[in-house]
Length: 324
Image: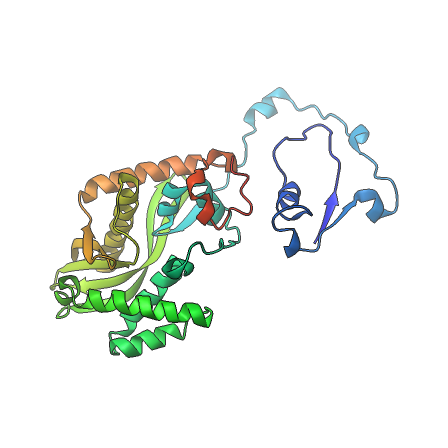
């Protein structure tokens, strides 16, 4: 990577960090990620072979008729934002992370695993593995599904064994629970994908995409939704709020795909302790979600999105974020 360094102290210069300055802060010699790139810093004169000439003195001031100026309006472009159904969970954790991931779509650098034993494997990867096992069990016995799902993991052999051991315990215990057993006789759809146009404000639009782990057809006109979670059940108001939004979106998406059917319940099944967290007060959650999206559409710059440093050790954007 070559950074062309241009000294710009003229009119219109801003104190806001430019992309080149951001790269320098993250990757330049002496930083934590210096070894990941070959860093060469040059100024304009060394590249051009001649002194850089400022054109500031050549600029002329053009006068615009006042009547014409009054009719000028800034050009605005409509925003079409597409979010995953779980994106707002990241907003709750840290609004700045949400900005980097979903609005700027920056590359992620996963932090190093912390701890020993189970905590050496990624919780997200474990969740993906268990989801795949449960999907494969529709047509295969447990042991076969565990092995087949393991083949899709891009993990070292040591971690793969831990995935299988942990996954077998969680899935076997869940399959013996009433949560799983009570749905065996119903028609089901697994990994049901959706795209849901949801919110429009002026020319701006927000839509949600995702997939439901399990869509259950309870009767000719009723549905139920189950989403598997390998983490702990929600313990505080903020975390519960994020889960309620997710279940609300799943319910709306299911009813959009099946207009003649109604979702009578939607829940998260937590495999750590085999409990189910159900969506309640659906209309109230819908109103709160619309208010949140209206607020988000008013935010434009990085500094508008607050930083919550408690999540920094686990954030895939910690390598870039100035944390202020």
